[in-house]
Length: 209
Image 1 (cartoon, rainbow, N blue to C red):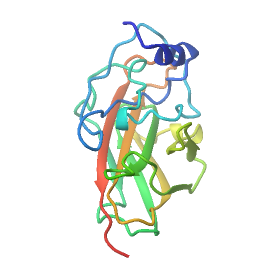
Image 2 (image 1 turned 90 degrees about the horizontal axis):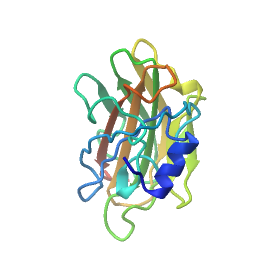
Image 3 (image 1 turned 30 degrees about the vertical axis):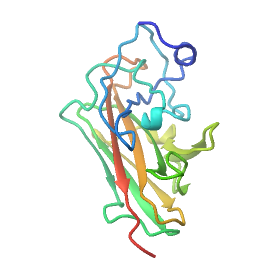
Image 4 (image 1 turned 45 degrees about the vertical axis):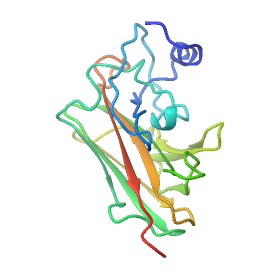
């Protein structure tokens, strides 16, 4: 398979590694499944976290070109977000937990981003991320978008379950926000083979002040 220049360069550098993030490119909010592509490369692990901009939302590239083993969202695993079920309160802080369960998972990773879902600010970063422990960090991409993702300490699951908790300060605005989230279940063998990639997007509406 021939990859476009930037993606090929990242693959060759081994940056697409521990977190095999899959795209969700279709729809108004960038949601929609896409099958992980095969690659002939063999990327070393990147357990510190993926490069910024690999959630698959709003046309971002993905790490699925270097992490493969099954179609996106293969049945048998679960990726969920806890803490945003009732929407968000503008300007308020919300504890958010990402829970990822996958059979035989020995290494885990994720990346997510909160952005405005529509309107004039569609695709712009929404709110701020505050890590609560050493399992999670926040990084900023070249376009200014803030991404929340795992760290080295956060890459080790327990009995096939990985959890990451952080605080999201919602934007001081009355507009829907979309969270694009992707996660990778790895075998812990420093190989991109036989990885399982999962992705989802959820729209979080404001619920008043």
